[in-house]
Image (cartoon, rainbow over all chains, first blue to last red; front, side):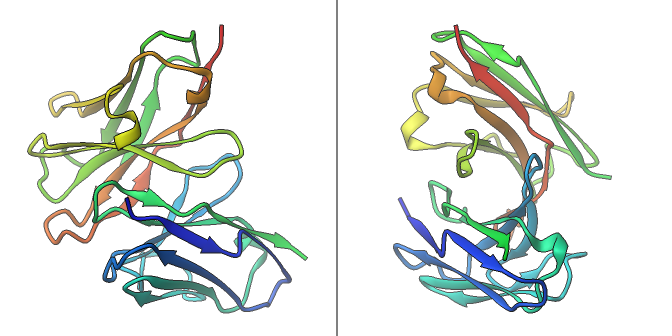
Length: 107
Length: 123
């Protein structure tokens, strides 16, 4: 199985901060990495797929990069509605796997 | 408008069989560009992929639960059903179904999710 390790697991930040979350894969997955945002009591929401493609309707302050084994999700200027938990996922390789999540909290 | 909605029991006893239904609208389960997956999330924990089914009926299961899971689809009813046998309190979780896109290009991602249904396993 391909393990996805996110860092940090918890992040405290202020509105306006630039935030970067890393997802490392235990083996190369080319660019087939997906990012989701989840708020308490809600289903995850797709942010980015194929590592860097922004889903329609997602604000441009979100961006993704990386390939192979190291990927990043960046929020250029954190907004109040961005406080949530973020997950990376790979599902091009069997079995699909998720990272353990990164909770972004208010400083 | 694409929607997915999970339904099933709220409470299940240990050793029983859990059956969950995902009813979809706004797309066809026969569309080769798409598939449907089930994912769960125990309270306060991370997401866990369970199973997925493609339009050609190809089925994938998470290895750790493969012997207990069955996924099936009824395109005419626009439903995907997940059954889990011999449930345990450790199976207590919110269960989500979601649509998989990018199947033709094999660049897979989940673009629409159901709201989730919380299932508690307890005697």
